[in-house]
Image (tube, rainbow, N blue to C red; front, side, top):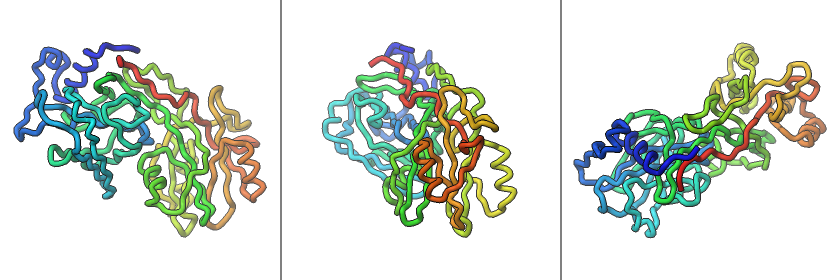
Length: 351
């Protein structure tokens, strides 16, 4: 769906200033600037995986102030610090709204930042000594942003850059597989804190296997996206097994299996009720609905319990030959069915 640049600009102004769309359009929404700072953070967005992220900055004094050379610093609630120094070529940016975003959002944003720069669990972001914002957890439904004016989820993810005005929706993420050779354990995740910790080496010993699968993270599309999620999507629980019984994780799209697993082993810890969304296969045949792919669950049958979740039949065969046991529905042991939509984000707007 296409919209005019003016309509997007008015909507962004309204959400940033906490005013109505009409007030913003009429110029009545004028932010206060008691400290004389030229810029202010107004909105943050991230998909669940942290690949699609943006920061919106509002220029409070028309024609004044330069971002060039200033450093963006973000500190997560767990103390992880990341920094980005804005390049000198940003000196010419003179728009009312300026966007800092990842490459996946668009290559023509005002300022590029690395993937997973923003912690989805919340934290504090500063722009030199110009502005500071301590924010709560970011919505990760793929179509909502956090707006400073509301102090919470402000709804539609509206992006305004010098050459791009758009609405962004990312209802599907890649669930990435990792392997730890020393432990011979596998792990999957589609969440920014996990991916960032593993890829950065803060959790040592893990490496990507090159395998992944798409997973929905929302059942409902945003206001403009037009996405239609597969029917009967279920929450996929993530259960942690402490070191004494595996130091590993277990995933299931069956609420009954999640509850029964926790009841059978009091030491298990429910980390999240909804790591992502998936559908259950046919209980007898293991068949998935049209357009979705089977995810096989295989157990290592060791005291240090660990499961591998694979979409490749070749990988499944390899694991069985290595002594893993097939678990799940049907003769092939299908744990759940994933995907049902392309991974490309929906971006509607006017470049």
